[in-house]
Image (cartoon, rainbow, N blue to C red; front, side, top):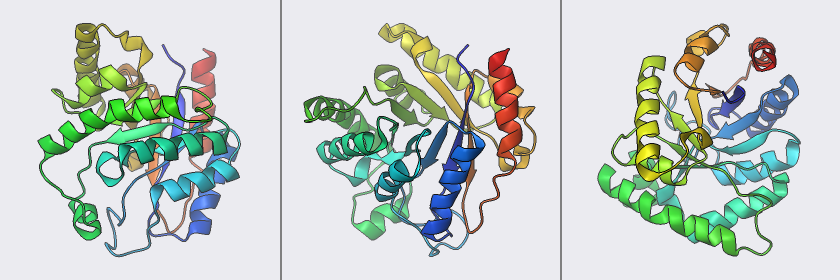
Length: 261
């Protein structure tokens, strides 16, 4: 089994930037493995017109103020940027970070982002087709950069659609992020394994990620439920205005004991 990894998912909303930056630094100091943000233009919960910051500008900053953790969007919306531009942004942040970027990708779903910023919302099926078309373009553009990325940037795909999203994951991703309870994640993992078998991909090459619900932040034993579902990367999502990350220390201790065993 892969080693357990812990990820802080910073929701860039309802906080000033100094608080977000400090939360990332604190999470690294406590010992998490990854710091994610998300790619939206407005808060997803709480005051809908509250404070919010842009994903990739923030990632460039986090690349400078952290030293060890991997960073990335969970996830970036395929609809918001030309795929060639997105690949070059990813390559640049990869270099700023010294090779710590994870390129999280999703097809998009938050209609307000689209309407307010002038993107065509279309249909869920159309957005998935767009993602499928853009992933090879992104990979090709990454290979053409000068200088090239410092490593093969791992692609993360988020979502649980069994007919398209998990097939795209089997084709392109190094990490899959799913949503739901452990039993739901276990089912999606089996579907992903089946897609890998059909496409000739070693399913062991894909790391599996899932979220810890906020009600279980203080309970590292929940990690055993996720492990039983095949999840080895655990994410902890939190937005502002304050970031109390003290619970992470117990998870880091549990992770280290679990990985040592």
